Image (cartoon, rainbow, N blue to C red; front, side, top):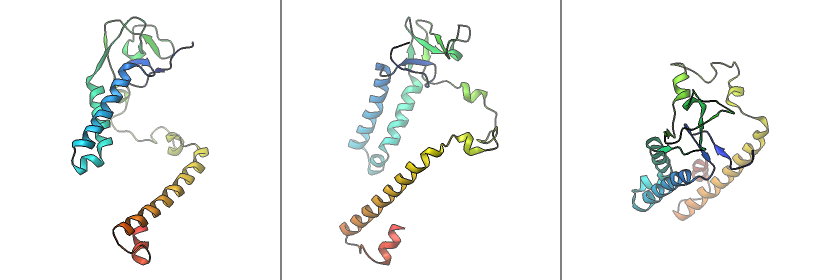
Length: 170
């Protein structure tokens, strides 16, 4: 039916898009990133996004959501309840995790991407219609890099022409 889009790819919790719990989780990432930008060493400043996301993952791994009447959960979290469209009614008052290990537990001990499909590219899901935008993006990024390298050479008073410059671009 009509209503907010349910986000169902994060463990056993199924909440509407823009739910306060998700906004709080995103704010924890933003505040951690800002804290590292303000107080961190040069290394932490340059890797603040990575560590902000790791912090968000840790928060989501520790946090739980206590269901209220009308909430949904993944069918794997409540196997004894009726499952409709991959979702089951959550038990009010029960704490659900933002993480689950269902896919990891069901995987073989050693597996490869091409284990079940002789064509690994098809298994990875590359669509040919995305090739041209990727090529265009590659050329734009390359042109930007050449300009950035040239300006860096000018700012640091290194020759921005000749074989030494060409070796920097390569």
